[in-house]
Amino acid sequence: QVSGVTGGVEANLNVGKVALDLPSGPMKVSINVGKINAQAGTLNYANVTLGADVGDAGLLVNGVSAGNLEKSGAGSHVNYHGHGQDAISLTVNTGKVALALNGK
Image 1: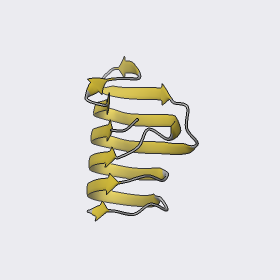
Image 2 (image 1 turned 30 degrees about the vertical axis):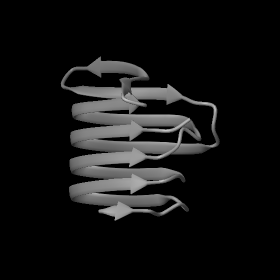
Image 3 (image 1 turned 135 degrees about the horizontal axis):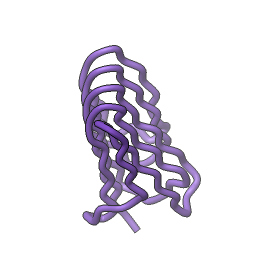
Image 4 (image 1 turned 90 degrees about the vertical axis):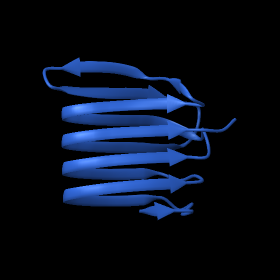
C-alpha cells in the first residue's frame, strides 16, 4: 500500500495486490496476477489507461463511471482522456483494476 506520494508511483509485480491513495502524480503499475485499487485526489490527468486481459477494469471520476469501456472476451479495458498533464497506466494480465479520480 502506498499513500500520500505526490511524485508518482511505478511498480511491476508478478503476483499481488497494490493499493494506491495519491494526492497527485503519475501512476504506472503492472501485475501479472492480482488486483490494483487506486485513487487520486486530483483530476490533473491527461491519458488514463486501465486494463485487465482476464478480469474487470473500472474508472470512477467524482463518483461517476467514466471513460471508454471496451470488453473483449474475458477482459476489459478503459481509456479516458482528461485535461491535465499526468498519465495513469494500471494493467493486470489476470485480475481486477479499479481507479477513482476525485477533484475539481
